Length: 404
Image (cartoon, rainbow, N blue to C red):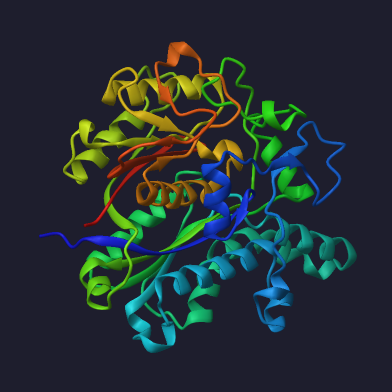
């Protein structure tokens, strides 16, 4: 029998809430964290809105010796990891160091660190190497920082598959636990709201240029015009169910199923891979479509990508066959942090029996989706499907379910 893997701790940093309770209070009530960028002057750029984490002061959470060695993203990662461990009631120093590991995701992170290295390049020519090595180093540093800070010497890794990476990291963490590691810190946090990072994001051509926060990010809407980026995400603590039960841990839910595919070459005439990822995840969880109570959508806010996702959902569940929500309309798309935040949100929704809303949108009738809009919807929830897609063709689907 395959070992069950459960979530016992959550750490959340989001544009509409810092900490799990603040985030959930905001999300269940439809409070958005999207606004004009404040971390730099965006007036020269065509896109000026983002989801920024409010009120995060690293000095309040981390020892001063760590601050010169880290940038904003790494600091948020370390703090949310601390919160997830505390939420799970885990004290790493009391556990075997080789029985704890870290598997996280990264996508757009590293720009702020790289920008600082470029500043050194401009002022000190001898610094040219670090400027160009910064991204390769940065993809690994956050996972390593968590490991070092907590004395975790078990399996470690970083998954890089853009927005799909958060689900891929959780799936890799589940694999490692099934191989024998009792505890894995996983999930993802992304933060690259800085001039260099902003230019790189604009190059995708998919960012909204609307200046009105309530009309800028409109997935599945007739007026969809691109997405708003954001910073943040969630770090989750995953454990073997038997180990969690033995120590009397509170369990949010089980990572029950996972599927991943890659889209075919454009122009090939082959179908996109998202529906197949859903089918694989359901089969892995040994569930039928009727067993899914809610879908958390990827919500690209690009008309063609929205159509592909809507067709995948209706192809599996039927027209308006399952409630669908995209609470990321309150935070912006968080790259590798988006899907872990959706997973955390799904677990909180299951616990309360409440589907959070997709804000500000007027659903396009042609998509035939039962979108939860305007306000939260009470519901009996046992299982949730989370979808994520990464730039370039990555598709991932993950199922979480309640544990009795």
